Image 1 (spheres, rainbow, N blue to C red):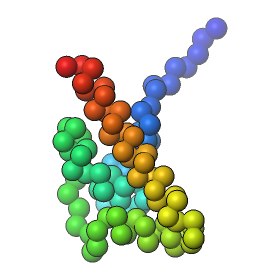
Image 2 (image 1 turned 45 degrees about the vertical axis):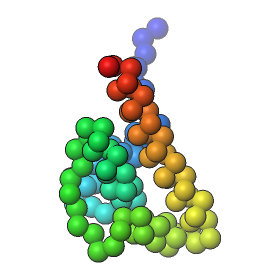
Image 3 (image 1 turned 30 degrees about the vertical axis):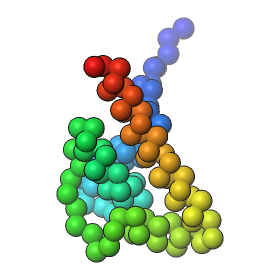
Image 4 (image 1 turned 120 degrees about the vertical axis):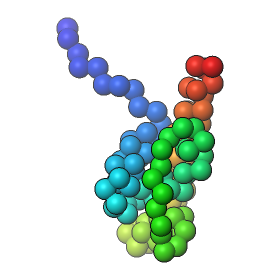
Length: 100
């Protein structure tokens, strides 16, 4: 039986991939803002993050975007996004430590 094997993604990797594409296309999206929030840590892991100028901190801009869509549910959803980007960074760190 033949299967089309999909590469296993790290937790949150789809957010980072989309965020990097969006940043490259100069689009402000939830994913691009999330990548900017985690940029210092991601850069430390060797991930190239384009420099972007925002009118306010990425954290505030992301929260406002989420709040506009979800109202009172914004806090929970925002926190889940932050947890996912942290999980991604930890998974990359773990993989890098296994390669050393």
